[in-house]
Length: 298
Image (cartoon, rainbow, N blue to C red; front, side):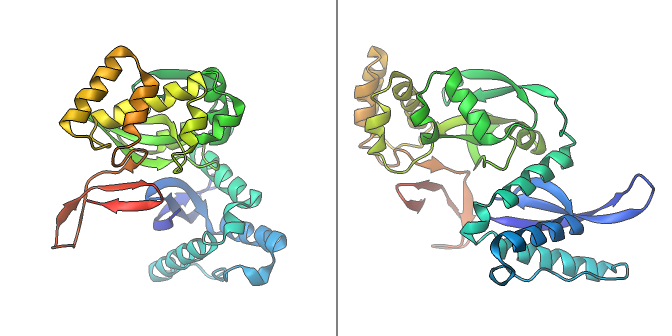
């Protein structure tokens, strides 16, 4: 995961006093707004949990009000601090760290109360699952509720994950996998444009497919995802193979369809939005796909 603090904002207390807040982004998407003292409190808690000597140095306090240049310096220092901190696996798996990110997101959206909301989760074929959940319910809890709703066996739940996907005209773009320290409802509200929360498989090892396909619900989840990926060109197939897959789809032969699709290039990959790179020449358009333990540029 990539953490950044690209900018700040001036905020006002209820008593009229002002303070600087720092906008947290995770994997390029806004997550929350926090104050310096909140980050300092997090640092102190992590020191008690993990030991001061193993953590990066926290940017020091200032007695006087900060000038614009000092504010920018602090922003940069805090960004560097959180990036170093997040490189430590102990921190990423720490309840204090994850709890901080959940609380900060809830506080930013002021959704900390018992409010219940209707949350839509989609399959890749557009089928919608609607749940009534607390607005602040975390990703893992939402995932378990979705899988329970569709009767997926408990031991297969974490073979799948919830993804935030942007719908653009007739196409979909993967934005990110939702993490356990997020509320899917709040994360969806935070982003601009039409976004969906989508259930997709969450493993690279295609041999796990064999286990998942033994279950009727698991088989259907893999099937609808694979059909959608083939139709969008995320999985590459020759015209002959496309005709073969279409015939199997028409017969409802899900297992046989998957057996063919699993042999194709980019099966099980996630494809991201087209971007540009400087190789083999500047401004070359590329597609990036992640899967099979590789990052593929084409």
